[in-house]
Length: 553
Image 1: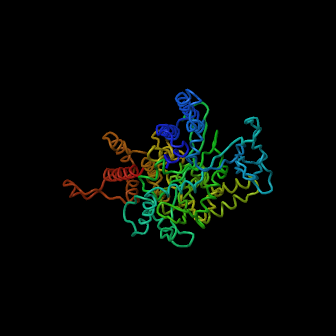
Image 2: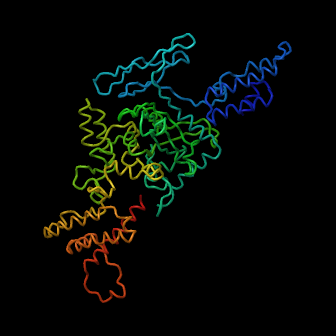
C-alpha cells in the first residue's frame, strides 16, 4: 500500500528514492529521530537529487521538475500522507495548579484554526466563584497573531486506535476466545487469567445478561493504568518534575500480547511540572469516561473489521484499575492510604483498637458499592471545602469520574499492581506507607501474626502471668523468619520464649490450637509436658506461619 501511494506521488520515480523515504519514516517513527533530524534528512535527499538532475536546467524533463517539486520539506508531510498521525484532540488546560480544568476546541465554518475560551470558567462548588485564570497566550506565526493554550493536554482517539486493533489479522479471533474461560466450569485451584475469576464470570452487560455470553456484538474488557514519573529521571536531590500517563490495555488479548507497547493504548500525557492535586485528576479522566460510556451503551459500530466485512457493533467495559497505591486512590476516589480510613476494601481504621494490623478476617466489615455511591454523591454536592473535608474525614471517599460508569465497582475493580509490588519489590515500601513496619530495631512492630490473642483471653491470669503473656505476644509479633533459619537465632528465641510463665505458654498453645510433634522413640513413655515442649511447639508454628506469609509476598 505504501509503495503504491509513493508511485502515485512521485509519478513512477526511481524505486531507490521511494526506499529512501521509507527509511526516513522508519528513522522518525521507529528509531525516535526528532522532527529536526527528519527534516535534515529530507533536505539532504533533496540536495543530492538536485545535484543529480540540475546540471542543466534547460534539459531537465518535466517529470524530474515535478519530482523535485513533490519532495516534501517537512517530515510531518510524509506522516500526513501515510495517515500516521493518530486522530487527537488538543485540550486547553487551566494553568492554575489547583484547577486543571479542560476545554475542548471549537471550529467555525470548517476552519482548521481551533478556538478556545480565553478565561477558565470552572466552578468547583455550586454558587461559588469561577476560576478566572487566563487560558491563552499570544504568539506571532508568519506575521499573524494567534492565541494558543498556555497549557495543553493531547487526548488520542480511542475509537480510532481500537478500530486499528480490530483490523489486524487474527486479533479478533484470539480476543473472542478469551470468553471461553468464563463460560467453562467453575475453576478449581490456581487462576491464571482474569477471565477465570469470579468477577468477569458474573459481570453483567447493559442488556441485563452475562457480558461473557455475548450476542451479535463483539465484547471486550479493558484495564486502566495511570502512573506518574519524573521525565528528567529519578533524582534524590534537586528539582523534581512529574508527568502522568493514562493508558488502556485490552484484557481479551492473551497475556503474552496484551502488555506489549504496540498493543497498548496511550490516551494522553498529563502535563507537569507537578501532579494534579486530588480531585483535579478527574478532569483528565472525563473525556475517556465519555468514550467508554458510548462503548457500553449503545456500543460503537465499526463499518468494517478484519473478521466482519460488513461491520460489527462493539461493546467495551473498563473492569479494573491497575495503578500503584497512591495513584489508585486518586483515580478511584478513595482517601490517601495515610488517612484514618486507610483501606479501600473494608472499614478498618487507624483509630480502632483492632484496626491497623488486624488479620482476623471474621472481624472485617467490607465496603459496598452502594455506600461508596452514597458518600461520593454527598462529596460532589458539597457546597464548600469544609463540608467536603468533613465528608472525606468520616468516610474516606471522594467523588471520581469513574463513578459515571454504571458497572464500575470501586470496591472490587481496583487491582494490586504486580509490576510495582512484585517485579520492583515495593511491597515493603507500601507496608511502610500503611504504617506497618518490619524493623527489628523498632519497639513498636505491628506485623501481627498473633492478633487472635486479645487481652480478654488472658484477663483471668495472675498479674505476673498477664505481664508475661504480653511479653510473649510481643516476641511473637517480631520478625524472626531469618533468625529461626540459623542455630544461634533459633536458640536465642527459644530461650526468650522458655522464660515465659508456664501458664502463659499453655494458654497460647491452646488459643492458637497448636499440637505437639509426633513423639520420638525416647518420648513414647512421656506423660508430662514441660515448658520446653510448649516452647518448641510455638516456635514450630512461628516458623511455618512466617514461611507462608513470606511465600505469599
